[in-house]
Length: 85
Image 1: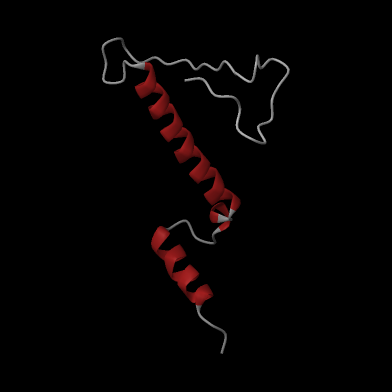
Image 2: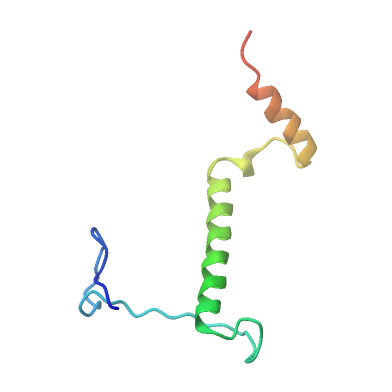
């Protein structure tokens, strides 16, 4: 079953009939736990989600917390969340 691009897809001039060829490289050994292409792609997409989560956390200011220690930053954030009196 072949489908066209989703509504609103940003097509490139290299897309042929709405199909895009993509690829990625891996050093996974043949016969390993992720030897099927679908398994490799799933692992790749999961890792991309983790990286996106880290990027989003950094964009929200987590790199700008005042302390190096997690416990101290947690207390600081709880104090900041207190309602004003």
